[in-house]
Length: 478
Image (tube, rainbow, N blue to C red; front, side, top):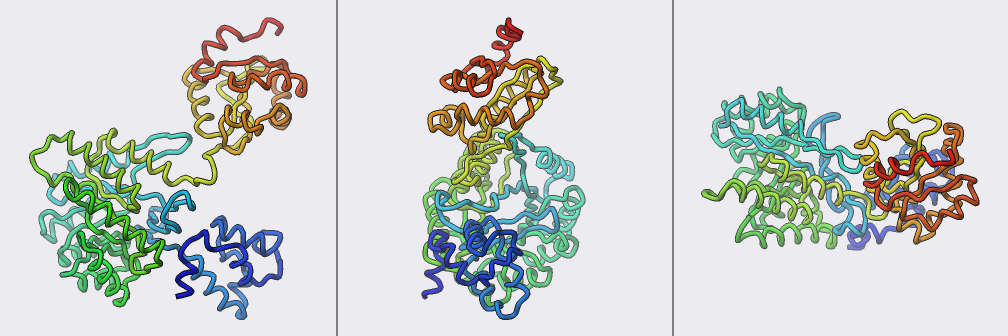
């Protein structure tokens, strides 16, 4: 019982817990100055315990290594779907609530095709999945998987569709059927891709488990609205030798929505707060179940699927299976996913330094902004859309916006001066005129005094940069 309590939450694990089980020789082989520094980074999940080579190589530390791996194991097991560089990882969560610690492994979104669709439709859907791309504050957001469903229950037809999909895309696959014979037919040709087998149930678990072991594939466990059965099946499958499991407690839209959310929440709570290892596996949400309701307008079902996907993602779903391919359905969810899986302890930031836009000359404008990602990419977009040739000094404020960093005395005249000198901009332009954000206007006098540059206070919003430069640049004194 004591060991389980020790693994309950990442906050209960201190650097000292790790340090006391390290060799404590301060050898530096891990790249840190001493073992305590290494232990601190291990607790924060910044480095792997495997970087401590004495733990791996010297027999006297074998027991300590095993104990450390056990202590550091996430409450939700990490499972890989797919093979090689195209694999995706699901699960690996350390905590229940995002504010406690970073969520790892953003939930993949799989788009479905069926073995009763025309080949042209299947290929068109795959093409749309692969072409889906959206640039969001410097990151490219994409879809992740293809879920192939056997609606025909015909082994040959399903196998044929799976082979066509596998030939058309390198994305990881989920094979969906409750019929072991149909599943086996498809696995024979794509098992090297290590697809997710969906799904084992109370009635077919033995045959599905045999397939998972035979072909070394992860296995989904399906027990709709029955956590006790889900737990029992998991226990049975683990005893059978299947270790890479995902859990599907059922997704019920409409009247079953409250039970759906409650089931997901209780499963994740059991794993993270109560140390229940039988429920400590990635969760599958299936928003496409809204399409089971016949007679509703297509747009209504798409809207419901988008909403349900967002609910499931915020309630611990580690993988989503969806049907809609419309941008207005998917885009809000990939953006929500991106934000959920950022580190809550660290603002999203970009690398500081000098950025060059267009083909600036020795007399082009020089501006600055902070390295808060949303600020930077907004400024970048406004500059590029207006085809402005200029230099932009990006100042390291720890990923905090202009207004907040000025108010918190993080962005000061001295910081700006140091950034200008470090950027090398003084060697690229002959003038000494610096355009500063309007929200940093209070720093203008101090910046001029410390840097020797003439300060021009720019617009408060970067959307005003084109009009501002048209009116104010070049300055009369140039």
